Image (cartoon, each protein chain N blue to C red):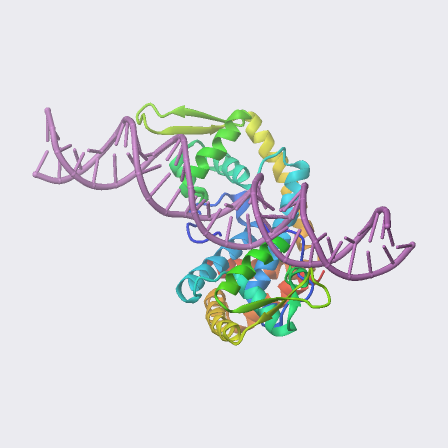
Length: 150
Length: 150
DNA sequence: GTCTTAGTGTTGGTACGACCAACATAGCGA
DNA sequence: TCGCTATGTTGGTCGTACCAACACTAAGAC
């Protein structure tokens, strides 16, 4: 998790390379994210948020589907769901017509937690984009969307 | 190192959040970076490149200064330098008027390796920005610079 | 000239995200 | 029925970013 500790004198050949700027931007973003989760995240991390969000939006799903949907590896889904389950934010039950499969459902407490995290996340967006004007923010977002669509 | 495996159906509340776009952009960038280093990087990683670049540009330095300059932790500097030294890309020698301090110097072979990596890196920049027009690339870079300056 | 404090390199940890391999077992198509 | 694929789980690995503690040196306070 790249956070604080920025380099003090970045070499020329590194300084303006997009890959470098992207990784610094990510460092900034994920530092703020980590700080926010630390302070108001109830000990949850990004995997948990992504899983809760997917469950809330797409409804109950098998772990394999969750993994594919969120881009999280099956094994990591298992681990993260166990944590969510022990916090009663999520329920696992065996799919009746597919005994090998678990159906994962978000609980009311899970939805509540998700909404709380939403608020935290929104505050962080503000912090991350703080140096940009709102026109620049829109531009920046649009450029990333285009970059990722290609 | 986030690489491939993109999510197939990203939840709404996640999809357009800048922190998410930034992390996806970083995933894309660092995936391409990892692939490039894998293919043509002689087994070196980004820490090695950053250290070689700092040494070439700022001249011989102590490990502590290298750490501060590059933003790499002292302990990681030690490890990365040991690898660079075993490849004879770098030389460590005790500072005569400061026996606790090592003076690290890049070797000619190190400079050569650095130039080679420069080429690899340049190719990767192209790949990363490929979906954008050149005007958009300039804009994107400028926005990140502004974001990081703030 | 001691005594304390700050700085240096090193070892050995931790966290987190992102992977991979192997396994038992369930379901399905040929 | 036989094999193949899919599922959940366990137990790893790797890279980046950190932290704590240690031995030791240098420099400043007194």
